[in-house]
Amino acid sequence: MTTSSVRRTSKPSEPPMPLTKGRVIFVGTGPGDPDLLTLGAVSALAEASTVILDDQAMATMLEHEAITIPDGVEVLSLGLADTGRPHPPSTRARTVLKHAGEGSRVVRLVAGDPFLDSSVADEAAACVRGGIDFEVIPGVSSLTAVPEYAGVALHQSGGVHFVSAMDGRFTKNQASQWAAVGAVVISTRAGAVTDLVDAALTAGRPADDRVMLTYRGGSTEQRTISTTLCQLADEAAGAKLDVAEPVHVMLGVIEDKRDGMSWFETKPLFGWRVLIPRTKDQAASLANRLRSYGAHSEEVPTISVEPPRSPQQMDKAIRGLVEGRYEWVAFTSVNAVKAVREKFEQYGLDARAFSGLKVAAVGETTAATLQAWGIEPDLVPTEEHSAAGLAAEWPPYDDVLDPINRVFLPRADIATETLAAALVELGWEVEDVTAYRTVRAAPPSAEVRDAIKTGKFDAVVFTSSSTVRNLVGIAGKPHANTIIAAIGPATAKTCSEHGLRVDVQASKPSAIDLADALAAVAAERRDGYLARNEAVVKPSELKRGSSRRRG
Image (cartoon, rainbow, N blue to C red; front, side, top):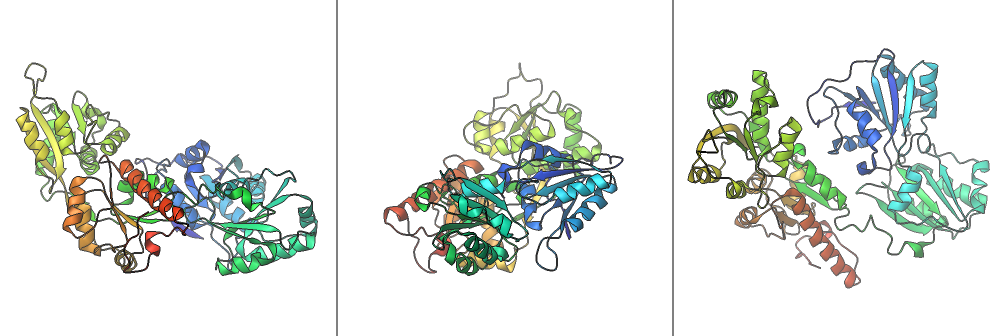
């Protein structure tokens, strides 16, 4: 069993006070897509003091933007036993009871639906014997969800039989029911596929029965194999899956009905490996949008944010803000909000100190960060989300309407003076204060640097000119086959200056529009392959040195 730390939280908060006897909440997570988590699951995680996962791979769900977990929450992964199989229920139950017995509010995340897909009934029974209260938050069953993610319509005249056999055991009595129905959906593990085939043949399923096997269902790595029952074991072995890998086998599937129905694996960015040169916190909205199109994103920080070398200027500005020195505060980045908030916390202040002030945010992401702090911006550009866009919509100083003519502008040490100069032109007095410094981050791992240079990433999305300069500086230029996406004209120009061909440019300078633009180009590219009756090839699958083929 392993322990990990939760990287992202919405706001610092203390875990709930321990209950006298503790409590266990069994939460179904669905087949693997974090978007299928229920509101009940999100609420339970927000109040957890301990989280216990089936395995470490499930931890990626906790990075979803909708999930918040209090600081200090312990996250445990049960993992696998030495045999390579899941721990028996008795071992899992002991771990759950240990933490619940310490007064924790334990959230036990399980794949699929707790009582249908996962063998957690024994864990719940152990809670009853130990005098620990428990509850169940149902999840979407993988038995029905994975076939739908594979584009399989299970409505058949012969009926459908569902089997959950994650322990890999198929009894004669159980399998005897398989022959009498039109289709059978079985969830099990890759190591049990051979036994499954033997059980199905013994039960009377024909050797040429059409079969589909889906693994990593509901994730951006989902794959589906279409074959026959007698060939299933060989096909599964050829996929080289780990014996403990969960798989879904669908017997008696009429493959013709799947034509045009495979909606998930044909998403425009399905299976694409996309590099985002930003931290996880900064890239959350972009990564989630890319995932909605089927992409798997990886974040590589290119800058490190540090306090200014001399804090006196910021200290003076914060005191001035509290004392009513300013009419406006203009935030041009999320980092500027964080820098001011950190100073506030040092002084024991909170968002109430902004009462009576007008607040501007350069774009929706910065505005959302302010709102999470309890501050509603008075001005957010409706057109261009940039310093120039903010300046274009800023009202001129009016000595009748505005009692104070000063603007507090906290910014990075390398920020341009575009906004400050524009505000001076409008009659405002600007106090331009260095709130934080940006320095180039350390290079990523050798594996990531190699993937960038050799074209193992399908796309790189650049959200600013500095991300272009810094990524090239710490990791080298992306391969010529890699699709390059830029958030706006300035970023595209910087890409060109560094010898990168820009394939995609967002219609508006926002992370969401950038993801949408990349998906549109990928869809056009995919449709081009299909129109030529060719297999769809990802950019990373093109031969090294070949030119990028456009649809």
